[in-house]
Image (cartoon, rainbow, N blue to C red; front, top):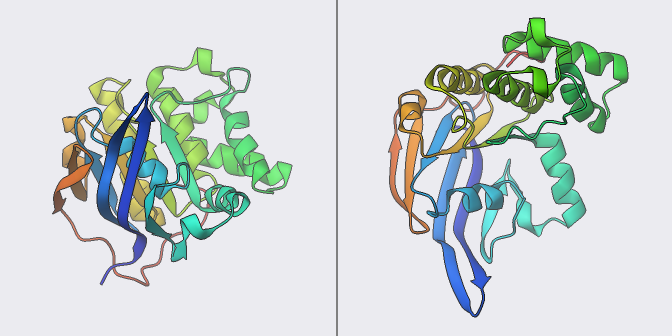
Length: 245
């Protein structure tokens, strides 16, 4: 048996478009494990992004239950869901979502301060995690001074800094060339292996399949195929502490 991070059952979601109702997720069952990179692949409109929104507490499904880290996510109040995301989840988006006026260090410090980390410690942790993703020389650069690959590494450092147990990445390499895309997925893989995070990546980029521990294909709101490439670590596996991914 492996350490289960997410166990979702019967997830359904529909959107109302004009007078019609479009079913985006259709009774989906989904699991994710600590120490493993799970890639959800499929064409645009297949329900991939809606699924991770439901799994991470960003969008309530119409039906179904999500057990995240052993807790029933959608039975919580909105305030407690927000606190759960802050404490346990990291997010990486296609568009980086960086603040234009903040340098790389401040981008990470801001998240840690929201988590209640004292200012001096937050800066030390921010520097350490940025150095660990290869941005030691770019600590004081703002987004306009960074390449696309560097911006995404800042986003990854921001997600990793608080040592989340769940990391959700929505098309993290689609705006990058192949070299930078390989760097990004390697960093995510290291976060799973070295920190025991459950990494869930939504992508339609076939270049990333070689780096997945598990590949799930979706189409038309359903899971068509679920293939385990490598087994996740067993429960009780230990991981180094500290800000390094």
